[in-house]
Length: 448
Image 1 (cartoon, helix red, strand yellow):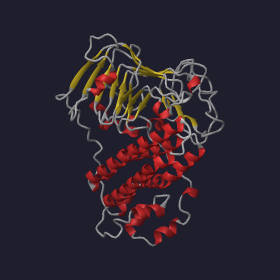
Image 2 (cartoon, rainbow, N blue to C red):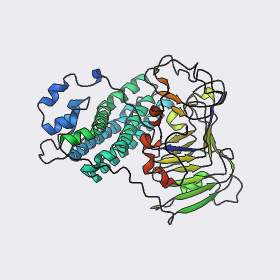
Image 3 (cartoon, rainbow, N blue to C red):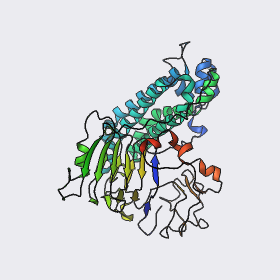
Image 4 (tube, one colour):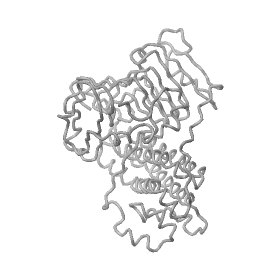
């Protein structure tokens, strides 16, 4: 959302994040897939055909299964792992070519985009390898229970690839990076299609399914927790003067939670909870009292990916009673207050203040009069207005009226309660299996 005022989004309840960057909806067209799809599968085995039938890029799918195609005893797990491993190899090739592509960068922003791509593609490899391991650890009879989590991880892989390409402003570099990632992107789309059809694929292999989704994730142990007390910068009375220093003390091989208490104050520092800093619990004295702030922006010469005042990457991150803000304002264009890449992250009684790009589905929230009646503004002409997705449901307050909202194909005012329920914590992020372990109070479904 953009408007003439600074947009402040506050949360009095719990915000939960199940994936790195969210769920990515991959819109496919027949022109981007194989034009002779039927012919591609006509010469393959029944097993390969069953796996590749749902995909758009069937020749790429067939190629990705070559390692197990002639194995008569191969199971769907073997085929899916082969497809994932093939995708890992494709991303690694793209990563190895990034430096050569970046040599043509002629300004600091595009040079930064090259470094971002290296980081993003490594994240993609990590997610693919985690997916490979998850498939290997699953029983054939319960693989469908892992469908949602696999889709989340693979969607994140796709998002990393697109974020890498979008970071370039130099047209020739953007095209070179896009072309270099084309094979990896198609293979990722194929993997998403295969996982989305896993129930049908298992049925084709005559494998009965057992539903175990009622199993709840075990709570994190507090026995091995480390506790560090934070106090305002310059106060000197705490164990550390900065949040960064407290995170730097994160012990190796920690089991349990790493707890940081951040006393009231304004923390003008850029914080990243690194990938290896898992199960960090950070709490403050209130969302308006304990505030992490920054002002980096795209207009200031920083890639959007790196403008965040606070970035949570390590899995299992929990924040309570804290605020996160970016004060760059409208002149900064893209300027991120909080970037959540952590899987199974939760935010309770937290506040995120930024000028734009905060939420996509807004439900049962109180919207103040700072929200313009149109609700949304185009970024650049009609760019992405037909492919974006913004939705609103049962909001309250002077800014909640929808009669004068934008008339975009990508914007929707949800009126059906059943449809709105699909975006709540159980169906959308399988919250019943893990949120309880965070210790934060939460409810499933809708309030009203």
